[in-house]
Image (cartoon, rainbow, N blue to C red; front, side, top):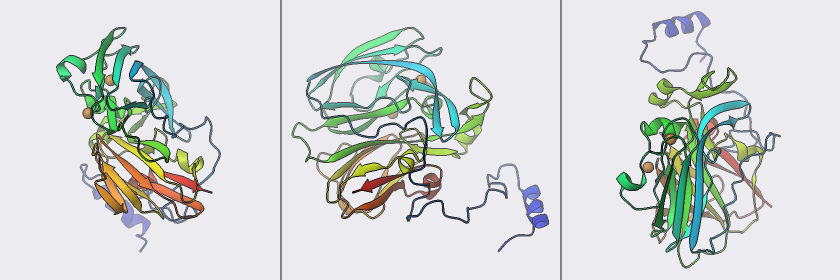
Length: 328
Ligand code: CU
Ligand code: CU
């Protein structure tokens, strides 16, 4: 039922300050932007610059990985036409994917090219945070080695206080640790889900957004993304073949929203929750990936067509946590 305009104005005027109901103009769209169930975003629209490649890096062959990561400020595009002044690993949001195998050694150097202290908390590594997750000052660096001991999909992020701001501003990424015995052959994608809370003009110029702290505390993101840009795999679908095994490494960087990961038209054959070596679940439709956690999803699309993948928390899908698996 439509509320008369005058009455709706009165309702807004009477709303107490602590109430976070959206203003009356923010109403659900009445026309569907997509032509498939759960789409929530136009499919195949053009977009520049090109999106982040979701294809997983190949399984590692070396046993020693020299990783050198620089931290710096970068302006990134988080949704069509929305620029965000981000704090980054390697100038990207999310940072680069690291892929190693159980038993491998990572020789890690972290360099701070930014104006404030940063650090890295790597969930795939075990060690005393007071030794390895310490703050790196501007123009300083930190070096240590760690050995991958547990297989899974892990998050890394800046842990400098307030970690909330450092994560919300883009400092996170994924680490894949493979088991020694390879997983079955599959087409593999990495998806890092995260949110952005935008304040226009808070970046380096009036056209650039940056973190809106009250929105962050109110759990009200403007954009929810896979790999740092809302809807980028709806506009640039991820390819697959009918009957092929597709494996998604999903890491949820948050910083606040649980990802209810679901592939429309598919049922997951197996889901490896967090770092479990054996499938935790088989034959499931939707599985939560907690903030700060990861999971590995295996699905086999039965026939050609467009299969949306979403966070089934639908405010988040509407804000960009949606993509398309295009099956030939
Ligand atoms: Cu940081
Ligand atoms: Cu953490």
